[in-house]
Length: 89
Image (cartoon, rainbow, N blue to C red; front, side, top):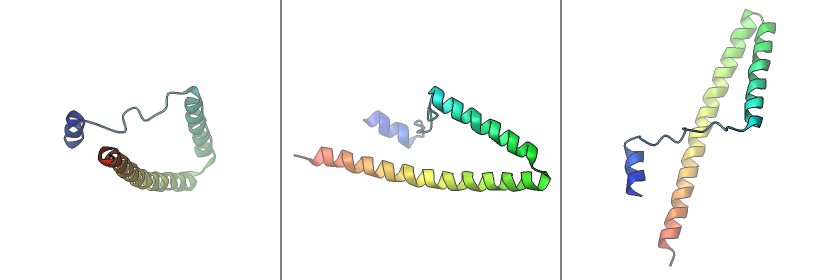
């Protein structure tokens, strides 16, 4: 337990390691996204491509903020579960 806490404190534990699923279904979906994005970009003019890049950046920013909140809520919930287990008689 102490090793895990020290690892968290010193930044040696990265919760994002291994986050990408290894299943074939995920790989196929990711490949489809890349192919569709390439097709879309080839159909857009320069202004459309720039607008698409801005949209993509805005979506990534929004998703990162949501992920941070989700992580914090999950961490807090897990802490409550652990405390409940420790204090239960």
